[in-house]
Image 1 (cartoon, helix red, strand yellow):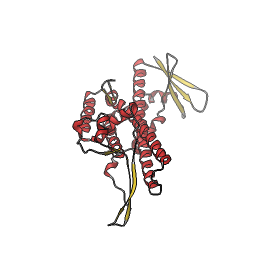
Image 2: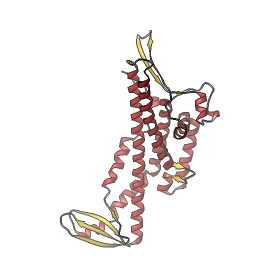
Image 3: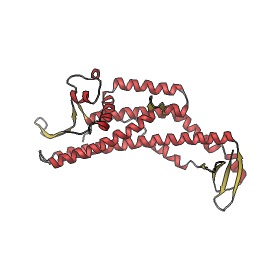
Length: 293
Protein backbone atom coordinates (compact mmCIF):
# COMPACT_ATOMS: atom_id res chain seq x y z
CA UNK A 1 0.00 0.00 0.00
CA UNK A 2 0.89 3.64 -0.31
CA UNK A 3 -0.63 7.08 -0.43
CA UNK A 4 -1.04 9.65 -3.16
CA UNK A 5 -0.12 12.99 -1.61
CA UNK A 6 -1.33 16.11 -3.44
CA UNK A 7 0.49 19.19 -2.14
CA UNK A 8 -0.87 22.72 -2.48
CA UNK A 9 1.88 24.81 -4.11
CA UNK A 10 0.37 28.01 -2.70
CA UNK A 11 0.06 26.92 0.94
CA UNK A 12 1.48 24.34 3.32
CA UNK A 13 -1.46 22.00 2.94
CA UNK A 14 -1.90 18.59 1.34
CA UNK A 15 -4.45 15.86 0.79
CA UNK A 16 -3.75 12.13 0.97
CA UNK A 17 -5.52 9.33 -0.86
CA UNK A 18 -5.05 5.61 -0.32
CA UNK A 19 -3.54 3.84 -3.32
CA UNK A 20 -3.74 0.11 -4.05
CA UNK A 21 -0.67 -2.10 -4.20
CA UNK A 22 -1.35 -2.81 -7.88
CA UNK A 23 -1.41 0.91 -8.72
CA UNK A 24 1.83 1.48 -6.82
CA UNK A 25 3.49 -1.41 -8.66
CA UNK A 26 2.24 -0.14 -12.02
CA UNK A 27 3.52 3.35 -11.27
CA UNK A 28 6.94 1.99 -10.26
CA UNK A 29 7.14 -0.18 -13.37
CA UNK A 30 6.22 2.68 -15.70
CA UNK A 31 8.64 5.09 -14.07
CA UNK A 32 11.45 2.51 -14.20
CA UNK A 33 10.79 1.96 -17.92
CA UNK A 34 10.80 5.70 -18.63
CA UNK A 35 14.06 6.15 -16.72
CA UNK A 36 15.61 3.34 -18.76
CA UNK A 37 14.34 4.86 -22.03
CA UNK A 38 15.87 8.22 -21.14
CA UNK A 39 19.13 6.64 -20.00
CA UNK A 40 19.72 4.87 -23.31
CA UNK A 41 18.98 8.11 -25.20
CA UNK A 42 21.56 9.88 -23.03
CA UNK A 43 24.16 7.19 -23.70
CA UNK A 44 23.49 7.41 -27.44
CA UNK A 45 23.79 11.19 -27.31
CA UNK A 46 27.17 10.83 -25.58
CA UNK A 47 28.35 8.46 -28.32
CA UNK A 48 27.39 10.86 -31.11
CA UNK A 49 28.95 13.83 -29.31
CA UNK A 50 32.15 11.81 -28.84
CA UNK A 51 32.02 10.90 -32.53
CA UNK A 52 31.68 14.54 -33.56
CA UNK A 53 34.59 15.47 -31.27
CA UNK A 54 36.76 12.83 -32.93
CA UNK A 55 35.78 13.91 -36.45
CA UNK A 56 36.43 17.56 -35.63
CA UNK A 57 39.88 16.75 -34.25
CA UNK A 58 40.83 14.73 -37.31
CA UNK A 59 39.85 17.67 -39.51
CA UNK A 60 41.86 19.99 -37.25
CA UNK A 61 44.99 17.90 -37.73
CA UNK A 62 44.37 17.80 -41.47
CA UNK A 63 44.51 21.59 -41.50
CA UNK A 64 47.59 21.64 -39.28
CA UNK A 65 49.30 19.25 -41.66
CA UNK A 66 49.50 22.01 -44.25
CA UNK A 67 51.81 24.18 -42.17
CA UNK A 68 53.72 21.82 -39.88
CA UNK A 69 57.10 20.29 -40.71
CA UNK A 70 57.74 16.59 -40.99
CA UNK A 71 59.71 14.92 -38.20
CA UNK A 72 58.21 17.04 -35.41
CA UNK A 73 58.09 14.32 -32.76
CA UNK A 74 56.47 16.51 -30.11
CA UNK A 75 53.65 17.47 -32.46
CA UNK A 76 53.25 13.87 -33.58
CA UNK A 77 52.85 12.86 -29.95
CA UNK A 78 50.16 15.49 -29.47
CA UNK A 79 48.33 14.20 -32.53
CA UNK A 80 48.40 10.61 -31.28
CA UNK A 81 47.50 11.64 -27.73
CA UNK A 82 44.47 13.72 -28.67
CA UNK A 83 43.06 11.19 -31.13
CA UNK A 84 43.71 8.25 -28.79
CA UNK A 85 41.80 9.97 -26.02
CA UNK A 86 38.82 10.75 -28.23
CA UNK A 87 38.67 7.36 -29.96
CA UNK A 88 39.11 5.49 -26.68
CA UNK A 89 36.27 7.47 -25.11
CA UNK A 90 34.04 6.75 -28.08
CA UNK A 91 34.71 3.01 -27.96
CA UNK A 92 34.11 2.85 -24.20
CA UNK A 93 30.77 4.64 -24.52
CA UNK A 94 29.78 2.34 -27.36
CA UNK A 95 30.54 -0.73 -25.23
CA UNK A 96 28.11 0.53 -22.59
CA UNK A 97 25.42 1.10 -25.21
CA UNK A 98 25.91 -2.25 -26.92
CA UNK A 99 25.76 -4.10 -23.60
CA UNK A 100 22.37 -2.50 -22.99
CA UNK A 101 21.22 -3.09 -26.56
CA UNK A 102 21.93 -6.82 -26.64
CA UNK A 103 24.29 -8.98 -24.62
CA UNK A 104 23.61 -12.69 -24.76
CA UNK A 105 26.01 -13.58 -21.95
CA UNK A 106 24.48 -11.01 -19.61
CA UNK A 107 20.97 -11.88 -20.84
CA UNK A 108 20.26 -8.26 -21.73
CA UNK A 109 18.16 -6.84 -24.53
CA UNK A 110 16.89 -3.30 -24.02
CA UNK A 111 13.88 -3.54 -26.33
CA UNK A 112 12.80 -6.82 -24.77
CA UNK A 113 13.22 -5.40 -21.26
CA UNK A 114 10.90 -2.52 -22.14
CA UNK A 115 8.26 -4.40 -24.13
CA UNK A 116 8.46 -7.97 -22.84
CA UNK A 117 7.92 -9.16 -26.42
CA UNK A 118 10.01 -11.99 -27.84
CA UNK A 119 9.44 -10.50 -31.29
CA UNK A 120 11.46 -7.44 -30.21
CA UNK A 121 14.37 -9.63 -29.18
CA UNK A 122 14.16 -11.49 -32.50
CA UNK A 123 14.15 -8.24 -34.48
CA UNK A 124 17.27 -7.08 -32.64
CA UNK A 125 19.00 -10.41 -33.25
CA UNK A 126 18.12 -10.37 -36.96
CA UNK A 127 19.45 -6.86 -37.41
CA UNK A 128 22.69 -7.73 -35.56
CA UNK A 129 23.31 -10.58 -37.99
CA UNK A 130 22.57 -8.37 -41.00
CA UNK A 131 24.96 -5.67 -39.80
CA UNK A 132 27.68 -8.23 -39.11
CA UNK A 133 27.39 -9.60 -42.64
CA UNK A 134 27.19 -6.26 -44.45
CA UNK A 135 29.29 -3.78 -42.44
CA UNK A 136 32.98 -4.68 -42.25
CA UNK A 137 33.79 -1.43 -40.45
CA UNK A 138 31.47 -2.43 -37.60
CA UNK A 139 33.11 -5.85 -37.28
CA UNK A 140 36.55 -4.23 -37.24
CA UNK A 141 35.41 -1.54 -34.81
CA UNK A 142 34.07 -4.16 -32.40
CA UNK A 143 37.38 -6.03 -32.45
CA UNK A 144 39.36 -2.80 -32.22
CA UNK A 145 37.38 -1.77 -29.15
CA UNK A 146 38.43 -4.92 -27.29
CA UNK A 147 41.98 -4.66 -28.60
CA UNK A 148 42.21 -1.09 -27.28
CA UNK A 149 41.02 -2.12 -23.84
CA UNK A 150 43.48 -4.98 -23.45
CA UNK A 151 46.42 -4.58 -25.84
CA UNK A 152 47.08 -1.27 -27.58
CA UNK A 153 45.78 2.25 -28.15
CA UNK A 154 43.93 2.86 -31.43
CA UNK A 155 46.41 5.38 -32.88
CA UNK A 156 49.98 4.12 -33.02
CA UNK A 157 51.11 5.72 -36.26
CA UNK A 158 49.71 7.91 -38.99
CA UNK A 159 50.64 9.45 -42.31
CA UNK A 160 50.15 13.07 -43.26
CA UNK A 161 51.18 15.35 -46.05
CA UNK A 162 50.15 17.46 -49.01
CA UNK A 163 49.90 16.35 -52.63
CA UNK A 164 49.79 18.69 -55.60
CA UNK A 165 47.18 17.97 -58.27
CA UNK A 166 48.62 19.32 -61.52
CA UNK A 167 45.32 18.97 -63.38
CA UNK A 168 43.41 21.22 -61.00
CA UNK A 169 46.38 23.20 -59.62
CA UNK A 170 45.25 22.45 -56.08
CA UNK A 171 46.93 21.00 -53.04
CA UNK A 172 45.28 17.95 -51.48
CA UNK A 173 45.85 17.37 -47.77
CA UNK A 174 45.90 13.78 -46.58
CA UNK A 175 45.89 12.47 -43.03
CA UNK A 176 45.42 8.75 -42.47
CA UNK A 177 45.61 6.19 -39.67
CA UNK A 178 45.82 2.91 -41.52
CA UNK A 179 45.31 -0.67 -40.39
CA UNK A 180 46.59 -3.24 -42.86
CA UNK A 181 45.78 -6.93 -43.22
CA UNK A 182 48.17 -8.08 -40.49
CA UNK A 183 46.97 -5.39 -38.07
CA UNK A 184 43.37 -6.47 -38.58
CA UNK A 185 44.20 -10.13 -38.01
CA UNK A 186 46.13 -9.25 -34.86
CA UNK A 187 43.10 -7.55 -33.32
CA UNK A 188 40.94 -10.59 -34.05
CA UNK A 189 39.05 -9.70 -37.22
CA UNK A 190 37.97 -13.00 -38.84
CA UNK A 191 40.24 -13.92 -41.74
CA UNK A 192 37.22 -14.75 -43.88
CA UNK A 193 36.18 -11.09 -43.68
CA UNK A 194 39.45 -9.83 -45.18
CA UNK A 195 41.43 -9.84 -48.39
CA UNK A 196 45.22 -9.87 -48.32
CA UNK A 197 45.26 -6.28 -49.59
CA UNK A 198 42.63 -4.98 -47.14
CA UNK A 199 43.65 -1.62 -45.71
CA UNK A 200 41.30 0.48 -43.60
CA UNK A 201 41.62 3.97 -42.17
CA UNK A 202 40.61 4.46 -38.52
CA UNK A 203 38.16 7.23 -39.40
CA UNK A 204 36.57 4.99 -42.02
CA UNK A 205 36.25 2.26 -39.38
CA UNK A 206 34.68 4.63 -36.85
CA UNK A 207 32.27 6.00 -39.48
CA UNK A 208 30.91 2.52 -40.21
CA UNK A 209 30.96 1.52 -36.55
CA UNK A 210 28.90 4.52 -35.42
CA UNK A 211 26.53 4.06 -38.36
CA UNK A 212 25.81 0.51 -37.14
CA UNK A 213 25.13 1.75 -33.60
CA UNK A 214 22.86 4.40 -35.09
CA UNK A 215 20.91 1.71 -36.94
CA UNK A 216 20.55 -0.29 -33.73
CA UNK A 217 19.33 2.77 -31.86
CA UNK A 218 16.70 3.62 -34.46
CA UNK A 219 15.44 0.03 -34.25
CA UNK A 220 15.19 0.35 -30.46
CA UNK A 221 13.08 3.47 -30.90
CA UNK A 222 10.83 1.72 -33.40
CA UNK A 223 10.33 -1.29 -31.14
CA UNK A 224 9.68 0.66 -27.94
CA UNK A 225 8.33 4.05 -29.07
CA UNK A 226 4.59 3.33 -28.98
CA UNK A 227 4.80 1.72 -25.54
CA UNK A 228 6.87 4.59 -24.15
CA UNK A 229 4.21 7.03 -25.40
CA UNK A 230 1.49 4.89 -23.84
CA UNK A 231 3.38 4.74 -20.55
CA UNK A 232 3.82 8.52 -20.52
CA UNK A 233 0.11 9.16 -20.99
CA UNK A 234 -0.83 6.54 -18.41
CA UNK A 235 1.65 7.86 -15.84
CA UNK A 236 0.28 11.40 -16.19
CA UNK A 237 -3.36 10.36 -16.29
CA UNK A 238 -3.75 7.62 -13.69
CA UNK A 239 -4.04 10.06 -10.76
CA UNK A 240 -6.09 12.84 -12.37
CA UNK A 241 -9.40 11.94 -10.73
CA UNK A 242 -7.92 12.08 -7.23
CA UNK A 243 -6.00 15.27 -8.03
CA UNK A 244 -9.27 16.96 -9.05
CA UNK A 245 -10.82 15.87 -5.76
CA UNK A 246 -8.04 17.69 -3.90
CA UNK A 247 -9.28 20.93 -5.45
CA UNK A 248 -5.94 22.74 -5.67
CA UNK A 249 -5.31 25.10 -8.58
CA UNK A 250 -1.53 24.74 -8.29
CA UNK A 251 -0.11 21.55 -6.91
CA UNK A 252 2.56 18.89 -7.02
CA UNK A 253 2.16 15.19 -6.32
CA UNK A 254 4.07 12.26 -4.94
CA UNK A 255 3.52 8.69 -3.86
CA UNK A 256 4.40 8.05 -0.23
CA UNK A 257 5.21 4.35 0.16
CA UNK A 258 4.93 2.26 3.30
CA UNK A 259 8.72 1.76 3.39
CA UNK A 260 9.22 5.52 3.78
CA UNK A 261 10.33 6.23 0.22
CA UNK A 262 8.68 8.75 -2.08
CA UNK A 263 8.08 8.79 -5.85
CA UNK A 264 7.71 12.17 -7.53
CA UNK A 265 4.87 12.09 -10.05
CA UNK A 266 6.09 14.91 -12.29
CA UNK A 267 7.45 14.01 -15.71
CA UNK A 268 9.15 17.33 -16.44
CA UNK A 269 12.49 15.49 -16.38
CA UNK A 270 11.28 13.26 -19.23
CA UNK A 271 11.08 16.20 -21.65
CA UNK A 272 14.75 15.51 -22.31
CA UNK A 273 13.74 12.24 -23.98
CA UNK A 274 11.78 14.06 -26.69
CA UNK A 275 14.57 16.61 -27.14
CA UNK A 276 17.19 13.90 -27.70
CA UNK A 277 14.95 12.07 -30.15
CA UNK A 278 14.69 15.28 -32.19
CA UNK A 279 18.40 16.03 -31.86
CA UNK A 280 19.31 12.63 -33.32
CA UNK A 281 16.25 11.92 -35.43
CA UNK A 282 17.98 9.96 -38.22
CA UNK A 283 20.71 7.39 -38.64
CA UNK A 284 24.19 8.83 -39.05
CA UNK A 285 26.22 7.62 -42.00
CA UNK A 286 28.93 10.18 -42.68
CA UNK A 287 30.87 7.72 -44.82
CA UNK A 288 28.38 8.52 -47.60
CA UNK A 289 29.01 12.28 -47.44
CA UNK A 290 31.52 14.47 -49.22
CA UNK A 291 31.98 18.15 -48.52
CA UNK A 292 32.63 20.80 -51.13
CA UNK A 293 32.58 24.56 -51.53
